[in-house]
Length: 427
Image (cartoon, rainbow, N blue to C red; front, side, top):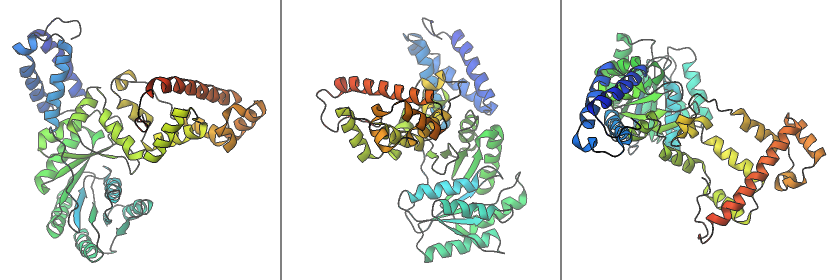
């Protein structure tokens, strides 16, 4: 659309052919694609748009708005943990990520000062109970299980146990199958009847694309889901499942799993997902990640050091640790508007960060505080200790000195007349 003086029905339809092809390649339901393209065309072909000065931007805006509508317009939070106990029941096919999600939801609740209980109701898959117990131990959350009992009985007894021991949230990890069958559904229906969950969540593997939509539709018809959680959204999935599930089932997507760590769980925001799909970034999610991981006290100290130009390799190392907590570098860069498109197909070398860490760790505290004292013999010792070359040590010191000079210049411009504590150093 770039270079076009105005929009016409012909160039709109030509551009929408590309949108249609991209959506189908992303494994979006073909009926959803057909309706979506029709809605965009109706919105785009109009007098207001035809007079637009920047037709390319106008098309992006219209497609974005229609995508947001398709994804549900507003985010829907999980059921509030306002009664003891609140019950979340997690279901889905085998391998979709139910056990991991149960752990993620437990950690999510724990961070809100709630007391969660993990309940092992998958008695069929070998080592499933052990897996949930391992997940629970890693985040210091108790796991409930009864040997020799059927899943509906385990769930009912878990509810009684939670009531007696003042747990705020029960997370029930149910059994899955390789495909939907009558036995699985009957068991889940019986369990639902016994415990009356406040949230009945389906874990849908976003890597399976259109099949995830079919699974969601069948589970919703039998169980009456309250929400869907998309797992494995950090992989090669292109959003096809996210675009289709809401439109086909009418069931809201409530959370998305964006990594393997138990902390990699985010609320689903239709507007942000639409921006990511269009390559417009997601700066709001990036800021929220930073707020979760950045220590405000450390940020204030860092700001003071930047003001006084006393930033050291020790401070640099601490910043690297905070950056690592925010998730994979490729994922973070993809949230910055424009960067995701620019980096498409480019592999981010995460090992480079590990090399830097190992070099800094091989330095003495005095050397980190005073990098100018690192002479030839010290460089040799640091290189040997970190498993790197002297050239790699030289490169790090050179880059660090260049960064300090840049900070000094930024300091002169940015802090002039700025009140103390008024600069967001975490960015």
